[in-house]
Image (cartoon, rainbow, N blue to C red; front, side, top):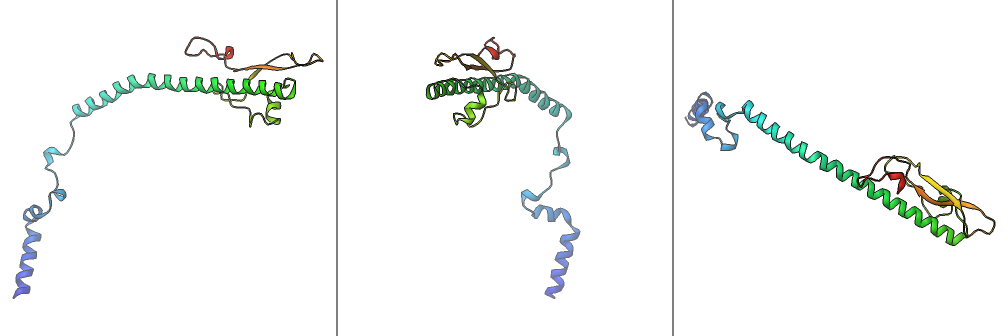
Length: 158
């Protein structure tokens, strides 16, 4: 008799679904159909807010990226000029090219110009003041980019 009562209870639970749903934990119950989504107006408001925030943030982001590239350019120029001076002090003459700094071990490699994305630095050559034979060599280095910096100067003047 107990088996028959158990079967009747299982059959009653399967056929009587609303009672079964009430017994489930709250996390497993389905939401009522009236609260199942967003209205078009709500979605349009959220999208408008996101667009306004993007318009405000994007110029600041681009400016920050530009400042970082300019900072890398300044540091690269400083390091290469320092190595030019160090080479001249050690060897008693100016290097013929930037590659000579790499071959002599003063630089690991010629850095990439952050403004052009290439190793296309413009070396400035001149008379070597330390040479008794009147030789010449690289006395300075500049960027190959003619773009304007945030301070109004051009990168090839730095």
